[in-house]
Length: 282
Ligand SMILES: Nc1ncnc2c1ncn2[C@@H]1O[C@H](COP(=O)(O)OP(=O)(O)OP(=O)(O)O)[C@@H](O)[C@H]1O
Ligand SMILES: O=P(O)(O)OC[C@H]1O[C@H](OP(=O)(O)OP(=O)(O)O)[C@H](O)[C@@H]1O
Ligand SMILES: [Mg+2]
Image (cartoon, rainbow, N blue to C red; front, side, top):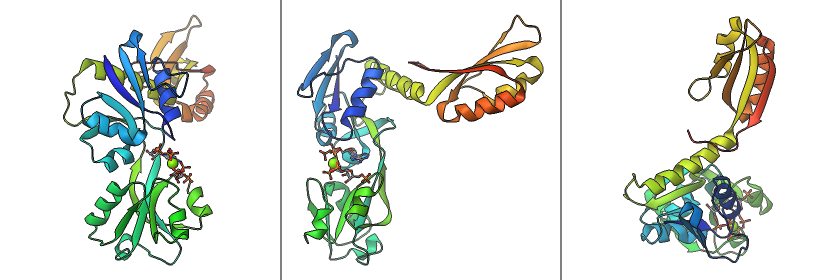
């Protein structure tokens, strides 16, 4: 049975469970459930604190886990990223009150407050900066107001939290993060259960990002139309009863679908339809 760690709280929890559900796995109905066996799929889910997931996986107690890249790197656990999941995207950045510092090189002798002490300590060392790091559990923005630190390092999505606290971002992102699947470093990449899990998750990503597009077009225009809808491998072109016309079927990125429909229409395509993809294996 494949043993998978899933975030039980926070920004990663709901989107991770939604994605697993779309991939056909059973998910918990009650947030207090800690372990869930999905015997149909031969999988056991362990709902754990996001910060602890890389530690469990790195210790070899669990096969794989879903966590944030920032949490994985902060943990220093013996685990590595094997797939990007495209949600909980954020940057990890330094911020301070205007006028305090302009770049990491100015932090010498100052104190940096963060919930990601591992990441920050490493980043300061890499830049040869001698600053102290104070580890806090969350809401680190307030550390500056209360005089605990001059600088903070925290997760930034829209930047609203920092703006509301009167802080400004300093320098380039320390890293760009998103939800990822992790596995113990150097584990066998060919484990069929893990491969199947990753294929299912990849199927969800593709189903979310693409729609199926169908249209009818005159034979003379097929090449130009197909250039607009090349699909992932090659579009299906079938004869129509109406002579001189063909039907084309192809996957297109959802975000481009309306523009492509307009362009196909201008080429003379008609009966242009898009339908959602429920699930897929490529
Ligand atoms: N606003 C956000 N947008 C995108 N990702 C976020 C956001 N806040 C946190 N994350 C991501 O969620 C993970 C942190 O999860 P964690 O549960 O520890 O914090 P949280 O979501 O802020 O919950 P908590 O309420 O416990 O602080 C990290 O990978 C982080 O990058
Ligand atoms: O850039 P923004 O869109 O404002 O989002 C980023 C904020 O969201 C998270 O905080 P959360 O609300 O989870 O509170 P926390 O500090 O207690 O973790 C994160 O820690 C940042 O503070
Ligand atoms: Mg938080």
